[in-house]
Image 1: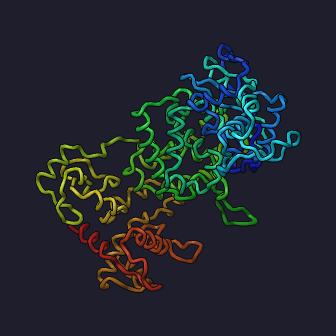
Image 2: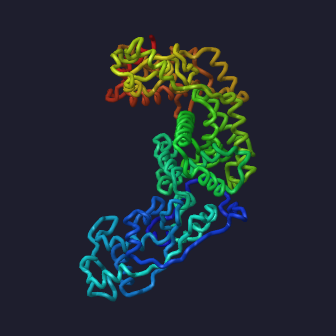
Image 3: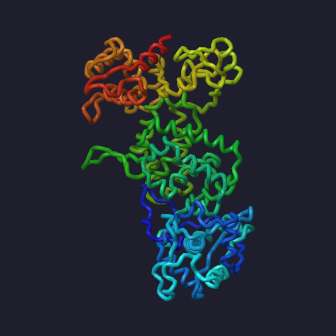
Length: 574
């Protein structure tokens, strides 16, 4: 807070500006703040801290940044009876108090009493004293009893923001106290104001590897901006976009107040929804998700992505849009979905204005971009549907009692818990969660089989369905097969070549085998000079190496199938 020096200013990580100066939407009857202003002795504060009733270094606060000389001069001030500035705390519903302003001062005093100064955890000897030179180098235990007692009896002025105060106004109070050289941002303040299970959930989900891969910027984590993005997602998930009211700051505050002490059942639902949206986002957009595309102009005809900055408007609509669909609905239309968003960012002026410039959190702009994107998704993918994904325990028992052999490795599954039920026809391709589409496998075998590609061919009917999802000829020409479609062709060609082959011959044979299945977009050239389908084959090969289907240590220019790859191919032909 006011004492946390030495930190660099917050980075500009977003390419649009939201209405930061709009007032908080706080009803007149909820603007009351209740405070108490006691003077409390250090000895009593130290006891309350040790008992866990006073949280001096809560999660939202930054670490201890004072050096030993600055901390020592505070101790010297106390011994000289010099008044020190007021400390602010907030009372929680359970009676615990958290320090809002004064963290460095209290940590300095408590650390001196304990004899260890953070963060290096070294012995705390007094250093750099200006008046009490005779105490230089003394630990607390080496002070005279009167001086020790003087520290214990020293009274510090406090302002306690009591628990009966309206939570909305507490956020405003915390903002006013947030006057340090590096101020806390809104999400860091929320962690201070609205502590609880919801904040814990946000921090937990922010560690999701796929989510961090998409964000591709560790600086977001440093200032908890990744947590704020997740809070935005859940806010629009709980509150329909047509009921949104600006400013976004107030909208997010209301969300975290309502679900502050979220129960396990609701948290579990949110985790699953978040995971689904993140996985779909990664599959469809990769690490270009949430980055705005700028089309070319007369000076430079080449378009480009704003890779260095994220766009919160794109984050909101993409994540929420995918939360309404199952994977089996979206993935077959992946290319059409990508093309649609590029079209909106290139040709739709209203959409472009809703995600760029300033005031992008205005109610009219929020509602416009949500409606346009959700309408587009429905036109391409269809109406959202909900189908069971997890097989019942009854089906699992039937399969186990009938034949306990793993459908992947063929070995016996020793216990029911060591097995799990997998879709024979992939769920994301429309496979139903029924007994006739189920097979029993080892958990470890199924986990090793991360790729879960579809070995089947693309039918003419499906080709036409994908083509019809585009809007106009310019989008139809961009349709191409998902990268995962090349897994089986790669394995089949290598298998026919005896397990190994030069890359150029492998790619050539794949092209010959799949000539009748390629879509118009697959035949276009990209910037590198490769035809798009050739580029996708190369990238899929890279992915298959990571998954263990192809050898990692093959000579340069040589592709080799692994034993896992052979088993996988044989299994798909059963």
